[in-house]
Length: 449
Image 1: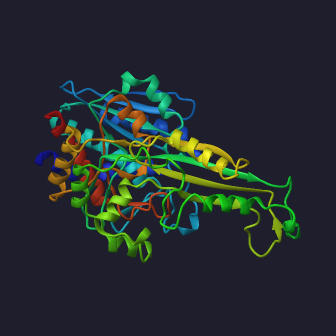
Image 2: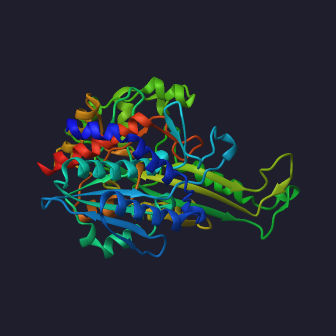
């Protein structure tokens, strides 16, 4: 691989330009900005840079860009990525324009640089470099690039069901990946599931003067009381049956937790916090992060929250919640349990609107793909990676992979301070180049397993 790594280093400026050009397109799915342009750009890049057979697969929303490059064996490796990005707000907190794609002090600062265009371009570049040095790929490669990940992938399950044969593979490299604060590469073997819901409570048919609070019920208080009952002081969810399907970590999981490096002090310093939930530390902190389901308030809306005072009794209150789920929790069952819990506690009037339901997904650490990725990162980084039994985050991995019997592993070009979904999203240029090498090495290694 020395010759290939050298080629990647010598041609990194070309690959960086590919990424900058893609990041300049403001492809915000939530606002339908730049979506057609970026889908066509990805389609053209796959065709021009990798000679892939490409197609736009229509969905009920934005299309999936699909590309396939034939290799010399029957084995197939797929790459899942997305071309949409989060909105750039608040713009005033960016040090550089979010879609200018500027490089400052060795960092590319741009919306989408880490999530997820940097990983997509690194994979395109890896295939390109391998072809330039060796001619043909040793495995078939498929690119599956959707445009709705940042809005919950509402049409990916339908795409997967209708195109199961098209996307079938022996393994899938999932979209994301990061380096820890100590520079060690993370390799993730799965994702948590999620039940994302909105609760809404209505009172009077109009906002009222707050003097009426003596006799007219305030829906904001009602919603707050319902929320307060969902968790106890130790952060444990109080919904009956919420934990009944949770799989206990295995002995192998416990070993992965023990080997996992989590930079506690660096993380607290970066986030300007003094403690973690329940004051956990060490292995218990890592286990709680990865294997514990959660119930989180994402945002509350009610009444007047502008500048100054306005004495108002709001007519409606809403809250968005996400429940991060672990194997074998079922997001549909969780919503049913939530409904029953609210009803049993006298909150039948609070409406539940599901807004995103994802199953958890995991790949065995002994799977050939997992072993290939671990081996490749060690080869490139010259240090053992941090193997995450499961990412604390969520994605549509189950629908695209495990549901079809395809193992999936995450590795990528982000860093612990990439600021995904936040101002000044960034990647280190050196990490981007290393990420290209890792994927190139995985292509070769996976062909031999």
